[in-house]
Image (cartoon, rainbow, N blue to C red; front, side, top):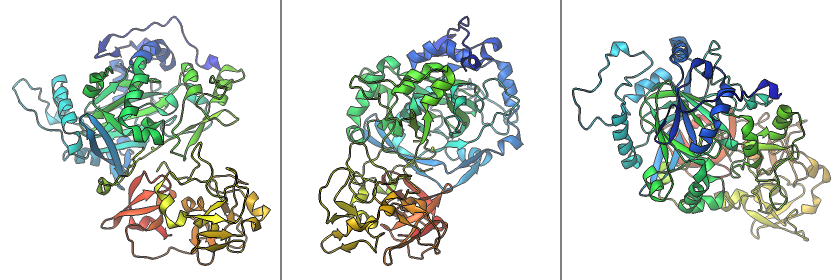
Length: 606
């Protein structure tokens, strides 16, 4: 399979120049034509600077611009953009809280909305300023000639001075592509690379995303999922400002961020993958961290590299397209990459499969000095997990005063599935889910009842979640006055062997089955909440989402627990704010995501 991606060692490409530490390449069409070999040739530069800029040949750009037809752009649908509420922790140190707006925009509506979210006017307006007549501006674009280097420098200063004074909107992680099939070279939706060997299609990983920007819309410091490469093409509109950290300082940068966001690090060592932590270049440089930076203009590519932390923001309305990719150089990073442990709704990249398919040899995982697999916590088949977060929102703005821990960006609510945290013993004898690290540990639903069994081990706890105990009325008797449960040994072997339809585990506690006649779907008590299971705690009955007995009606109040529909999935959470026809819900189990939904999306009050 290596023959599919041959590396021409005779191809030598050097930067045309450096822009504030960022290598800039201006290839000929001959050099540019082969995406894989071009990137192999420039890899050593990107692995030093964190990012590079590629300015394509003008004839290629002209062909791409022919894709910007009205019929093609009408297909761009910006669904559920995020509003970024940015808090100042200290001068130069910020934390983003993103709330998803349950709305949909066409790119033309987005452009119209940009008129109400413009950057500030120039401090001084001279006769030398470039003027562009409106008739010369394409229907999909804005006047970008105003964004000179000096103007961008002025706006960059304004951005960092006033970052927390406004709430920018970002149409991030929108599935789709503007390229049509006639573009065969550097088509972001069809880039020849090692991820082509994957059997799965993962949005944003090996399927392109569109990003619709507005003034101040930001992307916080982060690495790509699984430390992959990424490519970002700015189709049209105002520039983006990019920052990067040289790989030689990636450990120093991480150590500084740990020091600045100590509580978040304690919760998740991979906290920077949450994409909510922002620190100004001035602050970083004051602490000895070099920050490369460049202005990314329409018709240009930015490529990011493994271990190259990057961040940035948008200067005004624009549309960009991005995707991850991998060269064979990535394998050594992929073996060692670590994933965020506080997000459980993830899909896998099977590095063993990619390695063996590419090299045709047996895969050998990296071993740490203590003999363990390095950082992967991979399954026996060699798979590692990639978290794809389509839309992330962290804590409602109306709760800024609360002492709530905020952890995680990017593509669906990321924390749908309950999960067992690493190195934390199971807390419930009937399910695999540990909630002691979340706010739900204080909820009556998840209260832990003492069981009348002995010989407790981490594999066999003596306590049971109240919701789990309520699902076995024929075997268990609960005394809520004394917070005890009796009869745990009466749970049948068959109930213990049932496989949960959510976590897919069997013999990990016990599962109840849907009460509908002949339905065999089974769930753990804490798992069924996120799959639309309708609970009747009085009778002990529960119905799966296919056999629900109809929605429950109730007057919505802050603090209620609800199940709701969102992005074609069912979720569970607690109401934290009520609006006019909309509510904001804190999503179970992490209580770190807040989304805004219409009340019509609520299907059940638990």
